[in-house]
Amino acid sequence: ITALIFLNYIKWFNGLMGGRKVFLLINSAPGHAASINTVLELASLLNTRVKFLPKNVTSLY
Image (cartoon, rainbow, N blue to C red):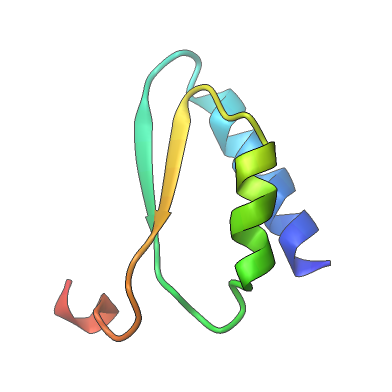
C-alpha cells in the first residue's frame, strides 16, 4: 500500500510540472521498498525522473 501512495504522489507531482523536466532525488529509507522501483517503471512519467540515493549517503548531502 505504501508503494501505491507513493505512486499517486509521484503522478500528482509529475502533473504539476506542466512540461518542465525535473529530476527528483529520494533517500533510501526503509519505507521505500524495492517494489516502488517497479511501480515507477510502469508509471510512464513524462516530466519527472526519479532516482534513489545509495544507502548511508543522505547525511553527506
